Amino acid sequence: MVDSIYHIDLQQLKQQGIKAIIADLDNTLVPWRSSEVQEKLVDWINTVRDADLKIAIVSNNTSARVEAMSSQLGVIALGGAIKPRRGAFRSIAAQFNLYPKEVAVVGDQLFTDILGGNRTGMHTILVTPMSTHEFIGTKIVRQIEKVFLRNLNNKST
Ligand SMILES: [Mg+2]
Image (cartoon, rainbow, N blue to C red):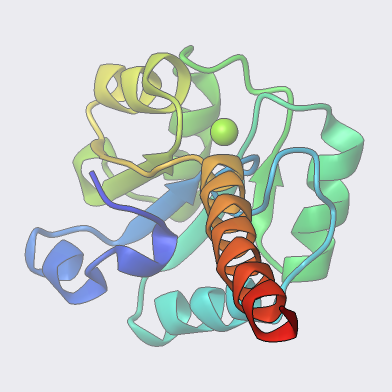
């Protein structure tokens, strides 16, 4: 369990014999239903590749959006995956010519990503859903705004 993809220790994964990462899309790589590719995500994917790890996306979401993200990021991707079924995970492992135990599945949902990865015999990493992060972020910003406004009011009286 880690806070986000950015908290994954890639070197530790490699020491555990991991050679590829299969990442979930929504709330793992991008906020739910977002098609926007952030620079931070592109940087992370480059870091993964620099660490000599392969990367793929497996999503239960509709193929069109998954394909768009796939081409934007230059990462192979499978949409409509029906996780926790094993088909998509196995297909990616086969494409990479790797054993399931050499693949790490990263996702925000226990009953699709993690269960599916475990059933396939892959290493699994649960991340906190990105939308929650955003929500907490918004809450913090609001608290800061409140303090700021209070100070302003005090000064003006
Ligand atoms: Mg997800």
